[in-house]
Amino acid sequence: MELVISTPMTRQPAPLLAALLLMTASPTRLLSAAMSTSTPRTPKKGTLVFLHGLGDTPAGWSSLQFALPSLRPRLRDISYVFPPAPTIGITINGGMEMPGWFDLYDWPIGVGSKDDPEGLRSSVAAMESAVERLEREEGIDRSKVV
Image (cartoon, rainbow, N blue to C red; front, side):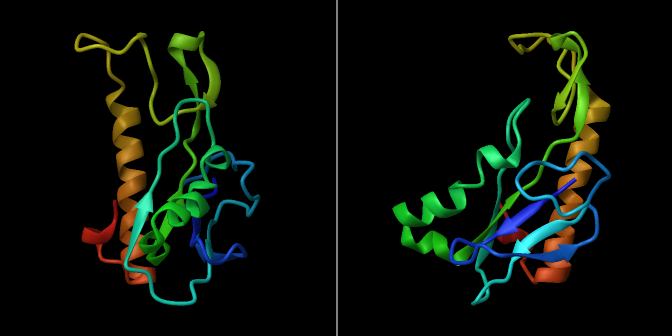
């Protein structure tokens, strides 16, 4: 797995953390199972964690780290995190393996749809771990992580 952490002013990856989870690496950058970060020039005021959708990867969204600050310059003061979902079998797609945060049994999803509590718990735990590491290793207060 690769968790991409970067800032809009720098584009060079540098190792940040050990593996968040043992998952398939995304095509954004192949850095084994480590999170990656761009070395910030100034301390960041917060972090935006962006979770991609079913079947997608961080590569499809990581350009947001450059697009958002061009629209709102104050967004240059935050780091951007693009974690990849694990590759899992998705029941609604005939069990096809693809990036997903949890299994889907029904489409469209409704109030009566079957849930995947284990998959949801696993994804929440992975994000909680990532936030704890950002707090511990980058000094980003969890109240500043969205």
